[in-house]
Length: 239
Ligand SMILES: [Zn+2]
Image (cartoon, rainbow, N blue to C red; front, side, top):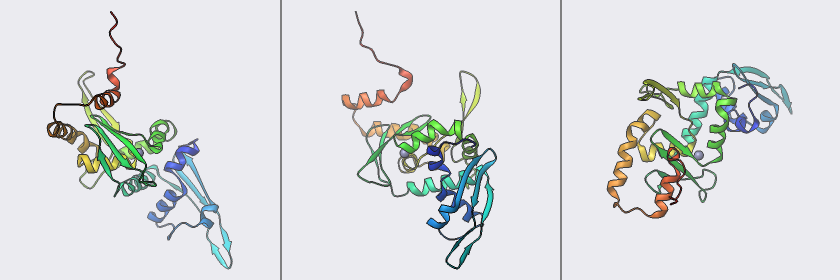
């Protein structure tokens, strides 16, 4: 996490999330205030997230200072808990076989597009893009920790292993998730872990096909084709 950009830090190790970690660790209590926020310094270190809250006075009240390091796993747990909480109550609409529209948490008139592929989900929101583009490079410890989170049933929250028939070996994958992705996983795929998502994917896609006629609008075709990168570019036949 050393050298984490401010863009990624604001999405992952922001002062709010860090404060909730400190509450969970019973180092502080109550809500974060502007006064405390102004005195808080958060830095990404290789071993975790370093937090310093400078001692301060407000009237006759004295605020004790604090200095600690939060482990990547604690940070990841808090981050994913918030992601799951935020995904509750978001409206999910299915647009086509693999495309879903999800309300933006801040502005319900604004929608984000979640694409459900056989190997995982992607979202069009800024948060997902930031996480996807920056996390592996800037905060590998946090990505690894997200992969380690397990649910009560023992399933990993965001880690899957699949057998690759070409290389004949097991391939592990950590699935980056924003709150829109979590909403689609839960609402459309009845999945709380990435493993459940992969298991249910085919069924949910097939059910949609059965419900519909074979007819497919040209708009839907182009949408579907846009989302299958391995097919490459379509070029008209020249002859
Ligand atoms: Zn999203």
